[in-house]
Amino acid sequence: MKDPIMNFDLKSLDLAQAAAHKGDALLVLVPEGFKPGQDELGRLIASAVKSGDLQTKAGKLLMSYQVPGVACTRLVLAGCDEGSPRQVRQAVAAAVGALRSSPCRKLVVCLSALAHDDAVRMAVQAAADASYVYTTTKSKPEPRTLEQVTIGVADAALSRPAFERAVAAVRGVEYAKEWANRPGNHATPTMLADAARRLAKAPHLQCTVMGPKQVAKLGMGAFMAVAQGSHEELRFIELRYDGGAKGDAPTVLIGKGISFDSGGISIKPAAEMDEMKFDMCGAASVLGVFRALAELKPAINVVGLIASCENLPDGKAVKPGDVVTSMNGQTIEILNTDAEGRLVLCDALTYAERLKPKAVVDIATLTGACVIALGGVRSGMFSSHDELAAALLAAGESAQDLCWRMPLDDEYGEGLKTHFADVANVGGRPGGAITAAKFLQRFADKFPWAHLDIAGTAWKGGAAKGATGRPVPLLLDFLLAGGGGGAATSVAKKAPARARRKA
Image 1 (spheres, rainbow, N blue to C red):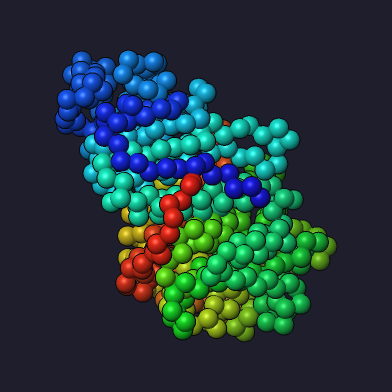
Image 2: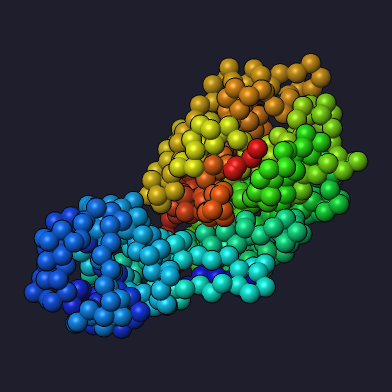
């Protein structure tokens, strides 16, 4: 797959230097209390603010064409309030969105009035997100408008680590988007495995792919039950990034990889069923994280596990009421075949035990109930370990890829009791996101564990239909901050990068 990312560059630019920089458009972020210097552009901005033509509220724009003294063809002034990460992202997204209809291929973003690294990170991420175009299955792909973005800061040397981290995150996000946006026939389990193998060509990366025979030998009865109604063979993918010391316990990421989910025998309504191609967004996010790790080369050890198959209503498909045996020996009564994600994840969680992890995080578009609870703003986060939960919450805040901790009281597990097996796979509608997490918790008692339900955040529907790439930024910040183990990690020095909902 062609890497769709634009090129990014970082330069030391004050307002006067930014005005002299050639390009198709110059975007200047203007915070509240902007103080102009003696340069012509600074005086122009101060005059626009004073007259009221430019408001400093985040996302407010003033656009001009062929301004004297500005080398770029277009000048965009964007308010960014106090310049918080959220406000910077909002301002850049609004500006790049407004420029999409113009022939703007080279953009200069001046952040000289903002003296923090988060501004650099958010500007890079917002520019990429606002200009992303899906092309994989189009016969005449719409070209990406932006090809080159130069980020201008007060001191490029000081901002370079944040810049390189942001570019790597964008590469990971867009890799995740591309795979999540693909239709089911272009993102089969076999194709996902091939994508993982290609990633493993980078230094420090290894990939192992297991098919039906190996999975059966492992005893993954729950995973196999979901796959048995499809002609597409399942794949269990293990990606390893070994950048840390040999013997250091890895952080394990587990991605739900249902490449298409019809619901099985408990079939979904036809309306919007096409969006069930997004049921592998958890797997796509794991691939995206490893794409970013390959770029950054941090001194950590990470393992990614992807359990991938289709969930279809063939004559051999698992039926409501069937009882299957999971990898750890627990028997499961499948009351609803559309609650299949927890079945593939539970066997992956058991497999993770053999890796002796310091922490395990599973990522899944698991429940419509989580969409009702949190909408599309925050991912649901469940954890049996307070330190791990705190690390994920902090990573979500730093990456502006937010999550929210949900409860795991024992009483929520009562609904999973059944007369016919050790546990049922559903517990009724009330608290559905929590009972799903309680089911997974039964298979995660040997290590610090967290579950991210991304059913509301992994993609958007309607006119903006498409994958978001979340929670790649959250996971990357989490890993670089220690991966649940406490100490922040270092990133290897290198050349600058050139850079829901389940029904």
